[in-house]
Image (cartoon, rainbow, N blue to C red; front, side, top):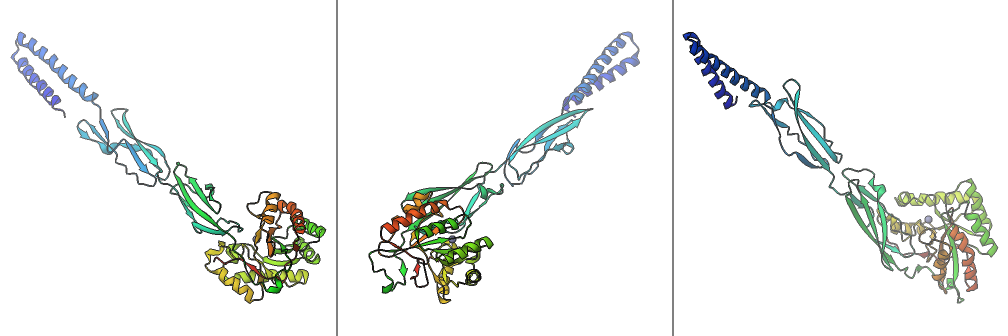
Length: 434
Ligand SMILES: [Zn+2]
């Protein structure tokens, strides 16, 4: 109770006492005084009562009115303090509103105190949940990669982790920045829903194709001043490309080599045609899935022998010619250290021969059209040696189909001889990098 009220009520009590005494003395003059005093007394009591009724609760927030939180940081409800008629009634405060600390946003918490008949005192608190943590891009594979200039870049992959957003991995943008002729940088960027950015970089250094290690004997070296071109086609057979390529080869009277993958009954017709028209058939693999085939020596060997058996059944030919998916120099297999070192020895030990390439058409990678395929091939031809040209007859590879005749005609005009690879062809191998 406020001191003012106590003083006022004390005065009222004294006046009431004076009035009572006056009443008992029964003198008219005193009675008048007594009545006046009663009136005054009623006024005071009335005023005190009114003031008491009018008094409002005093409400204050415990803690800050605006609270900033990082995502996943715990929100602690401190509540509000209410004083009503000098008493602490904080326990009667009704708190409404929730904060989802896993979702960035602005949340409002309401504090209400009900008093009197239907009066309410209320205040609010704002809780801002912010995501200030940047996502993280984790690159798989090496941050500094080394490729032969004719080797195709294969993205080893990446994963994005974030405290709020899921599936950011799909939103990564990759930009290629050239540093110089033999080096470029891949810049991976991603942004989360709150605008926090992340970046990762990978540098790719290209290596000139070294003079290939070959098992060339003197008698194998072309005696003429002109080289030999071995056209090779990987990743087929395909219904859309292989027949067209076979047609051109037939018209030009040129033999080539097809390093094939597993095929269905339609493909079998093409495999038979390849053999019947005098081309060489080689094993690229039953599967091209690097993760599977380079898992172990056994899985690789199974991958080629399975296809070898199938080719034998389809054509009667047992082929020992192989080409490693990605080439023997590939680094995509580096998830299994030294696997290529083991495999390149193992396949030869088991009587297979493998052929990489020293001329790449780029038709599975950077070459955008027939002219680029053509240029890529003719610019790298060795006039006095064996040229094993990497091309592809996978489905839809029109640029190669369109460039093929020009390549053959250029070769003929320059005096090259076209041959299919046989077991007598010296192996042409890249330097093993894993
Ligand atoms: Zn391939």
